Length: 521
Image 1 (cartoon, rainbow, N blue to C red):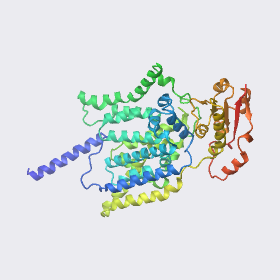
Image 2 (cartoon, rainbow, N blue to C red):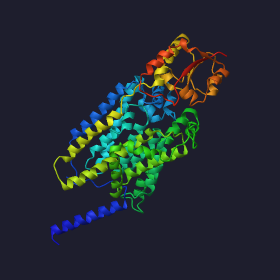
Image 3 (cartoon, helix red, strand yellow):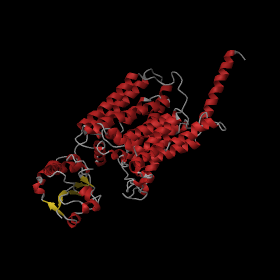
Image 4 (spheres, helix red, strand yellow):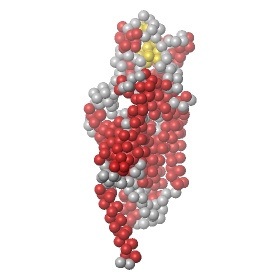
C-alpha cells in the first residue's frame, strides 16, 4: 500500500473511531470543527454585540424608576445591611452568593447593584456563545444575542433577582462538562444551591451524569481514571452546601444549621397552592419568542440527532422540574415565569442550533462568502426591533407610589422618636423609609405584633399584610393597636389621582390600600 493510500485509510479509520465514540457517548464534547468548517467571526463583531447589549441593559437599569418586583427589594435590603448584620450572608432565603455579590454595590444605591447584574447577564450571554462555538454551530454568536434578547432575561438583567446569576452557574457547568473539565463542572454545580434552590436538583442531575454517562478515557478497570472522572466529581458536588452549613455551625453551634434555618414555606406541600401541569410548557413559545420557537424545536432535536444531548437534557430537565414543583405546589413554588430565566442561555443555544441547521442547508446549496456574518447581523437587528418594544425600564408600581407618603411620614416619626419599631409585610416601606429591618423592623406576624412594645408602628396593607400574612385590621385592634387617621399622613385622594395616570398594575389582585397603626396598650 503506497503512502497516499495508507494516509487515506488511516484518516478514514480515525473518522470511524471518532464517529463510533460519539454514538456511544452522546454527552461527549464534539471534536473541534475542522478549519474552514464554520465561518470565523471577527472578534470585533462579538465584542460589539456584547458591549452593545450590555450597554442597553445598563441604560435600562439607570432609567428604571423602581424595582422589578417585591423579591427584588428584599434582596437589595439583605445586601445593603449584610455588612452590619453578617448573618445575612448566610440567610437561606437571601442566598449567600447573591447577598455576597451585591453587598458592596448595595452600599451606594440600587442603580449600582443593577449595573452589576447587567455584567452578570453579559457573562451568561458570553458563556452561551462559547458553548455554541464548542458545539461547532455555524452561527455561534447568535447564542449571545438570543440570550440577551430573551425578553424575561433582559428584564431581569437590571434587577437583583437570583435567576441571572444561577443562569451563569448553570451555563458554566454545561460548558465545563462538555470540554471534559469534570472537576470544574462539579465545583460550579456545588455552588449553585448558594444561588437558587434549584441548585440542589441540578446537583442530582450532575451526580447521575457522573455515575452513568459514558466518560471518555474512563475505561473499566482503570481505577485512577474512574476516580477522577466519576468519584471525585461526585464527592465535590455537595461541598458547597456542606461549607455553607459548616459556617452556620460555627456561628451558633448547630450541626444541622441549614436544616433548622430552612424557610418554613419551602416545604413539600402546596403553601402557595398549585397550578396546571401545562403551565411552563405553555410559557415556552413566548419565552423564546414566538417568532423563533420553531427554530428552538429544530435545534433541540438536531442536537439530539447529532449526539450532543447535554444542552437539550438540561432544558427538558429544568422545565420538567418546575412543572412538577408547580403541579404539586412543592417547596414554595409560585409558578413564576422568571424561573425559566435560569435556563435562558440553554434555550438560546438550542435556538442557535436551529438557525445554524437551516443556514448550513442553505449555504451548502448556495455558497456565498460572508453569509454567516450578514445573517447574524440581520437577526440581531430583527431581534432588537421585535423584542425591545415588549421590554421597558421599570416604572414605579402603583403600590410603591402609594406607599411613598407613608414612608416619608414614618421617617419623620423615627427622627422624632428614635428607637421606635416598625412592622411591615411590604418590604418597599423599609426601602423607601431607609429602615434597617433587623434593628428597627419587626416581622409582620401575630406573635411579633402581640409582644411588640407600646409605640410600635404597624403598616397594614392589602397586598401582603392581608393577602399573605392573613392579618386584618380587626386583628390589630384586638392586639392593642389603634388606627392613625390617614389624613394626618397624606392627601389620599391626591395620591390616588397621581397614580391613576400611570399605566401599571398593582402587586395584588385587589385595589391597593393601606393603613397605619400604633400600639397603645
